[in-house]
Length: 461
Image 1 (cartoon, helix red, strand yellow):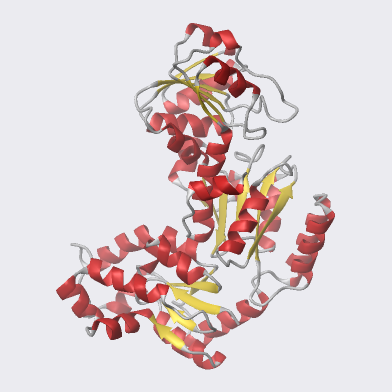
Image 2: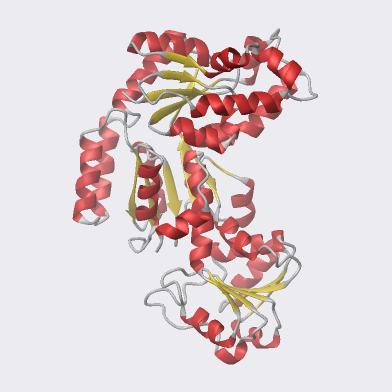
């Protein structure tokens, strides 16, 4: 049996559930708060009051890093998930359950606690503020979420043991999911592996992730994700969902209990109506490239803009041109506007360019308008230059040495546009940089673990 980790806010029942579950499974129970108290010779309340939260968090990280790798049930502190290093350490070789309940139940359970307040707010408001701050980290770092508000301790333990043995996908959903996966024309070895996962579920269950697009078999994501899953000892597998209907992909992903989906062309906008919620960035951009499945809900977000923003840091206030008017273009414009850049959107269909420009408060035009502009930054957010879509939107004489040229296409790494730009002496940014940075952020959303961009770059060589 793998190690079982229980996370969640104070008052969600981590300790009482953990003790009972460990008893049922005949394995040791470890409470990280108790270990901290033993190490420091003070109660948690005394540590917070006399030494401060920073000292407590340092001790907490030491305890989590030293957790035994053997079968056990571990209850973590409520704020432990806010440190990605903690998440990496407790996630390795573990199945993580987030225990949750309503704000009112939490308040009732922890009222009268001696633990000092972490904010200047009254208890009810403090819980609300901390839950809002921590919930994304709880959801990302947990494999499964269990509501403890309306269940007895025995019922919660029964749910956990059932999930550990069977997962959350029912037999009919698995069968339907397998029929769907057979439509995708997966490579034979991959289809065989997916068939085994769906017909002979492992214990604890392996979680599927994948890339959804049409086409998407060219994507490098499966190879990189599966190497990262192996490296961080996560019981996940990443595959392809190449299909023309975004709604069908999401429907079957729910049934198969797919953990995370990377969304690519042409589904970044089409997928939105089938999700339970999207975050503020995806809503502003109007496109989703990341879907996280937890608590039976599909959460949409966008990491493409991060993939554009980070390589362009240092260009704050510059003038930029974005070619394209699709989901990738909207992410690029959003990122550049976030950097305070003056942006012009250019597209063959000028009406589409105008729609994007109006959305973000910038200018628009047609492709021919580029010659009259003098941008500092040029971003290609079209498929031109990818695979069979060879060629370049610009000619050599339209480029200047002072320009930074960023081509979001990453296959091939050196596109025709970048080849021309390099010959002129422009600063060139390959689409691999966007891919790397957006993948790092997406991996954090799927797992709660922060991976360094340089590490992903090495994997792409």
